[in-house]
Structure formats: C-alpha cells, structure tokens
Length: 411
Image 1: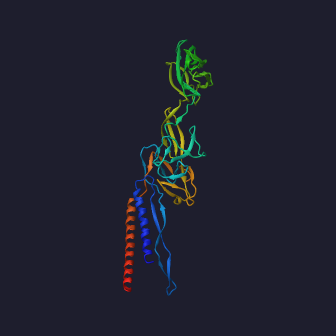
Image 2: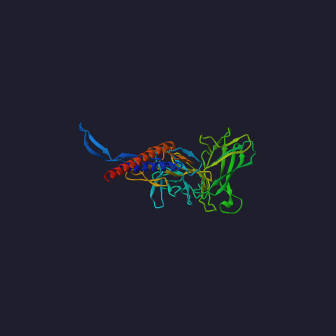
Image 3: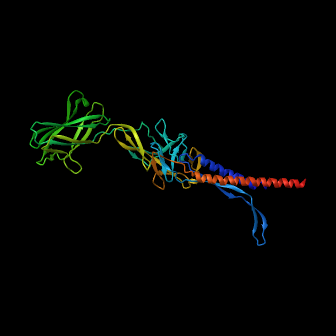
C-alpha cells in the first residue's frame, strides 16, 4: 500500500516523458500536432475528522487523466512542389485507403501514384470533388483527385470567329486581299479558312470564304463555303451585311462533324471590325473560340482547394477541388500513425466541405505545414517530468528503507 502512491507517480511521470519524447521525435514531421499529458489525483483514504469536523484524508497517488492535442497551426513553408498543400486554419485533408477506409490528416506532403492520383506518403488517396467541363460539383460524391499526365482538355470546335481587317479604299477594281484564320473541328483538327476580298466598285468588295479541298471531299485546290458582298459608307465603316455571317463547313474528310460557324463583323461596342480607309490593306488581328485537345502541363491549388490545370492547348480549367473535413470535437479523434486520424463517437462525424467555408481553413498550394512542436517548452517539460520521476523514485526508496527498519525491529 505504501508503495502504490509513489509507483503511481512513477507511472504518470513515465507517461508524460513518453509524450514529450514523442513530441521531440516528431519536431520535423510535417503537419504533426504536439500532445500534452494531463493528470488527476486518485481516491482518498479517510482517517476520521478533526475537532472542527473537517475530514482527515490522505491521497492515494496520481493517474493520467488524458492527453490533449494542440491543433494550432504550424509554420507554413512554401517549397514549390505543386502536389504539396497546407491548411491554414482548422480542418483536415480527407484521405482514403485502398480498402475504402476514410482517414484525415494535416500533413499535405502529397505526391502522385502511377495513375496520376494525389496520394499521401503512406499511399492513401487524397479525396475531393470532381469537375466536369471545368466546373466543380461540390454536391457530388467524393472521389480520388487526379493530376496526372493522362488528364486531358477535350477539343472544342470553333463556333465564332472575327477578323479585324482594313481594306484599301484606293485599290483598283479587281484588286484582291486575303485574311487567313485557323479554326478547329470537333476532333480538334485545325483547318485554315481564307477570306478573299475582291474590290468590285466604290465602297464595295466581294468576299469569298474557302478552305483546302482536301479538308472536305478531297482533291486539289480550294472549296468555297461562303460568299457575298460587303458595302461600306463614306466613313469607311461596314454597312452591309449588318448581321453576323453564318458559315457551314463540311462534310469534312477526317470524319469530324460539319462545322457551323459565325463570322462576327462587329466588336462588343458595335463598331465594325472590317473597315475601308485610304491606307494599305492589312490584317490587324484574328480571334476564334475553338481549340485542339490538350494534355496537362501543370496545375496549381487555389485557396479554396480548386485545382486549376494548364494544358498544352493553352487552356486553363478546374479539374477538381480538395475536400476539407471539420469535427465538432477534434480532441476526440483517434491517432492511427502516419499522421492520420480516424473519427470516433467522441469526435463526431466528419463535416466535409470546401476550404474557407464553415469555419474550415484555407489552403496554401505548393507548401507544407511544419510541426507545431515548441522545442523550448518541450525541454522545460522534460526537466519537470524528470524531476518528478526522480522524486517519486526517492519516495519509493524511503518507503523501502522504512519497511526494512520495521522488519529489523521484529527480529
């Protein structure tokens, strides 16, 4: 009985020392959250009461009452690794093992697997919301996020194009000028449309839109797909046609669908893009809204977790969004190693959503959150617990000596 009290102190101090040593061992572990051991006293033995009626009690030692986790932010360090990310604020990244078990982590030192999926260093898949056509669906079921080279941007056929062109009003009748522009079909193949302008009179030109015959039915030369008359006023502005010109190009020899295109003749302010002034004929700019298929070049993670990908065709679009989980009681999470947590009844179910909403922290891309272990305070605690351990050990020695003296008295 005498030995149980200091033994409880030894056990409690030993547990505290283990916590401190674990903190120090993980001072360089990304996303690690330090722990603190808490204590409570044990039952008391009653010896009676004093003359004033106050109870006379003696404690029976100490016990470990809990272990608290410090979920404050560690220093966020930018490292330039695109697959890495750090949470600034509360929350956890959502990960999933091969068996489908959902876990949670603060360690954003992610990498990619052979399939191009974002994974943790221990192989769990990083979960998030899928995107279709560059639009993220936050109402969809979570799925592994993919950022591999196999991620593509589909081709988009040209639907509208415009030409900013000046035609020389001083040109003689019969003078021609050409404006070429590259457009894309439904397969992402490029075709060169050529608009040929022919002066037919004062303030009037004929236009003819053509493309190589081999792009359509085959053969040589060019095939006309649209033609008409352009009329200008005395100020050099286009007066007719006043509406965009519809052009149908097809059937195409490569199997793509017939291109239905609109030639826009005015800018957003209504000003004519085709002019006729007394200066050399020139093509100033071209614009069209189609593009070829592209493969992923690189990507960035925005503060709300949206993964913006840049493709070889010059397009940028969202390909997914990292999910972030919050808990009613993070202290109730169970540690499972590899910097991973699992939910428990005490923690409550994960409330999963978008970074920066619902009290969730924001995400820093190409960065990692360092351990929040304070080395100075840990060394201070180490000294305190070491002294406590030594003091309890001396108490055991004292009790042992008393016991030996008592036995000696009987002999």
